Length: 452
Ligand code: UD1
Ligand code: CA
Image 1 (cartoon, helix red, strand yellow):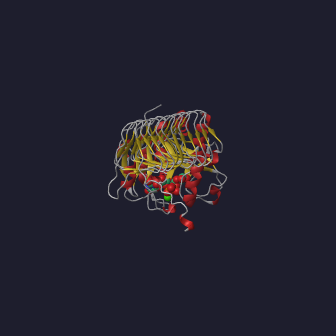
Image 2 (cartoon, rainbow, N blue to C red):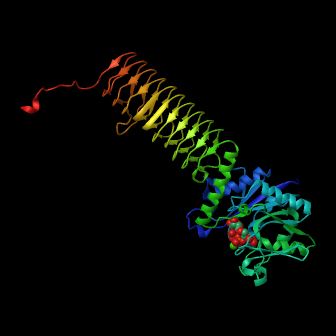
């Protein structure tokens, strides 16, 4: 392959999104639309990438990795004008300039590779990525001569009734010979119905310069779907979800109902793990092998080991190690590390805490800012009282301690190894090793009191 670079057009406002933020920063399956386009270029082996920014340029720039070059288009005078703003990026390029659009996240590396291959085998100065649509309204149409050679592209707004019948449409993505493109760009005019510099006009200009242009019909029309509205955003989400879920299932993950299983693009799931309906996996979540993630569980930036069972629970920015069971209805909040063979049962909340291997909180417990040792048993209704209204304090429960039901541990406090707390205690002082602490009022029975 010749040396290639990719230029992504993302200066447009995207008015139809009716949004305060730029269109390309809306998300599909948890990732920015624009990042998918960048990713597709990288996956096809083209790492030299620049983005044309305009509308809310700073915000778009900040979202991008600093390795990417950006060029600023002050006024949106058309796609041809946009490409011209990046002239320094490809001025000296002896090779291909791939032009992609920042609002079409479904483009795949395979499709870019196919486009470049068609371009090089055809020996074209420009190759247009096209699709054949039964309903081509709104797109530029590919005008070919009788022998099928591409002559020009006509925009919907400039097309005559005959041209409007043409079903082969312009995706807005291309592979250009960079030097031929530079020559053609110099000739662009705005004598069209929109008064814009159309990038599409370079096809006819190149032909007049004695060069040839070709088309590459996308193998999958979904690849070129651009997002212009919230409805199209939701449609792209469905397509992307199918792709992500398919890849996971092909790699050995079971999904009971893929249509209602929501997995982010960067999530990893191990073999023989089963995802139930309504599971939502977001961010950099990693799940090991042989896990069961039950219905309506939501995991964000979370690492799960192997053979873990999670039922109808929420876990945020935390980790859960092998053979542990969580839920139903547990809530594990950021900064928590749960060990192996642990149990975090129903209505247990854990926040910024560690639970060492074998620790158990089977029901109705709050573990906030705590360190729970190996094989500790927290009885039903244990509360780590971590907050005095101003500051948060830590609670330490050392290994093999047993905390009776309905105990309050008033932080800062330490329960030493092997200690035993009687049910109903409110613990304000450290409990020594292997000791029994009882901190509750003694029961008094007033016999026959109510008969008096
Ligand atoms: C363009 C094509 C059309 C094609 C369609 C595919 C032209 C003249 N027409 O149409 O043939 O069928 O895409 O969707 O190119 N942009 C800029 N700066 C500008 C104008 C646009 O960066 O001055 C960016 C937009 O942010 C967008 C992309 O270029 O990502 C395409 O612009 P858009 O206005 O959506 O394309 P159309 O003019 O509708
Ligand atoms: Ca336009």
